[in-house]
Length: 432
Image (tube, rainbow, N blue to C red; front, side):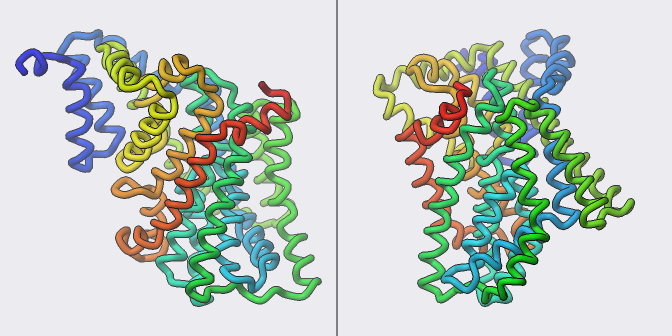
């Protein structure tokens, strides 16, 4: 026991877990644990500033603030509102029409914004009151928006894929392509779940308008619908990199706001920049602190020890896959997606190599786990944003979210058992 207390690897875990359980912010728990262990065991504190800087001074990560900025612009100028209006017209008064429309819009918005909480904020202000007015239970409406918003980190562009690609040295463009079909699969399972619940409770959509009203909604939403074509078409067509695509998305959103919808004002531009800086700061401080923790884990041998322990449990790849998924699902209850990537990927990298798993497929599977983690308490960022918008408590939203989480886990099982679901599109496009 005494030797264990002198082991820096032991304190690396304890000094992270204890503050986390005491509700200390994740970035602070990661960073403080790393700094204390490095200082106390004299592991080279001079490297801390270098590691802190090098953790974010990477070209691929430049896409993160650009995609956050693009998403905020497109929300503020009215693109989200027009897309919602079009989808509501298309689904009409079918059973669960508004709930199904919410999932479809969230999937589409995932092709614009790579952030789950940002998607809840963009869509929830419109869809939650709209569903409540149509007779849907407000807690159910909020749960649908919150869970469906997880599609934003599965369907490209995705901040999680950018981080995963940076850590694992994988092509972000290939990861983007790999996320499309699994994202549609998850959306399909969610649509079935909300339809079954809506049929049981008698929820329906709003009556569809006339043909002219549908065409008007289509014309209004056209510029928003064209956004994924520019972003993803440019990446897959080899016209620009994901980072360049993010910058193009920003200027496209500004063009639509100034010249097409004419809704962008100087005051709005200030709010857009303020939200972008706040959102980017949160992401980047987690990236830097998680990077420090990951470097410390490698330095004290923690990563090698845990990886060896995991590989020693079983030689059956299916058993190891099941264990990894369970670990990641539980990690999602405590950590955000970026922290999970930096803490667990160094441990899982040798496991991926040992079993010969495709790292692109593994990245998609892991990202679906992270999407589920965004709505699993106690650290459920999507539910938190949904609660703030709806005025409900986390407890009120969590219960109707359970069947939707079950649907998401079933979709995760499909992607886990059938890697071809994720690898089909990259292979079709000749990206691997």
